[in-house]
Length: 475
Image 1 (cartoon, rainbow, N blue to C red):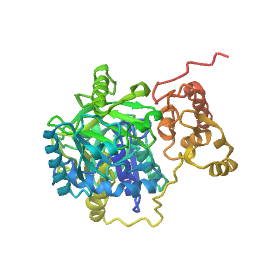
Image 2: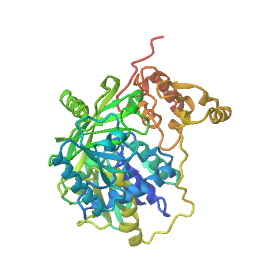
Image 3: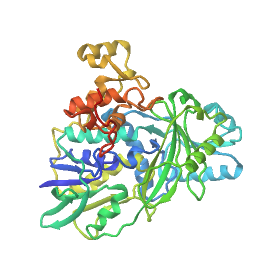
Image 4: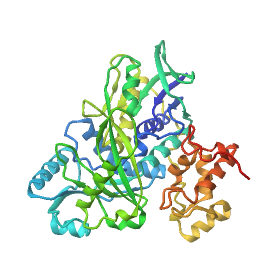
């Protein structure tokens, strides 16, 4: 029997999983997909919000600001790229300037440091490419950017390195409360027993809650994005937001930690987790982004994608123990700013809701640091030569667009949590994320996966299941 089972391997579940391994516990992470971080955490903006948007007194406001303050140290410990580039909420008329003042007051109540209203001239100095129609902005210097799936992957890998167990292809279909704990059963008949359970199932959070008798409705909103090539990285310096309206925050224009520019998302209500993009949605993103910048290099668009984010009818995070069953904890309805809040949420769930109650002991052998595996292209020539001298595979470039080496791909396949398919390697190393979108590197990546896993190359998939990329050998 495990001490704790965590359901869902997004950034929230991943960081809770890691936090639990700081204690002398047997912990497992259950994920219905064939790889971790396959839901909202792999398809969002990657924005670390300053904390001025959430209503004072809400869990969103509390954990947004706390998570923002924690993010730099967490990213450093886990070897994840993070940059405090600051955010700007741009006003295009005097009525919107009034709204900015309301946001600034809200931010001050939430404890956000350094926020200020700036005028047109300073805005243009900070963002030379900003639209001539802009009249001012709310500047929040503590806003930042991070790789969302990089954070989740590193947290889960670090937890596994510290003794946590990962079970993929484990779609939970029933949960039974028994004496001393719970029995969690998967669709393939596998069972896990644990003394406590944490529900971090994202879009499936309401379904999991219903299995123990809790009625919590979780809705779904799809957001569509465009991603521009790194060649356009100089088009914007800060994360740019439109002034929010009663309909929401609207789209953003932001650099990414890897030098791209991201545009989006839309916000369309839907009934399921469908992540297909639409002409209508992407056209809206293009139009609005074009209103933010004088010159928008859409000709450098390299891909589009969509993510579906969960939300609750409470319009706030749901972080609580079940009212029906003792020992079952919900951490669901985590919409924006959930990524920013994730380190603080993990700390609260484990330390405040669970550790004191169960009397857990700290794990003296816990090592919270994880080396940054995939920054080879950022090393100096001397540093690269030293790495290659130890392992010649780092001297062979596989992905020319993103300058990813064979050594980095092999590490992604071998280390925790191991990549098992083309997209798994892509998320871990950026191989296939550049201008050609895998047109050159995919065949060689497939060969490496086949060799390392000991399977025929025609059994290698793009993203698990039956997504085969080869039909068979012809010669």
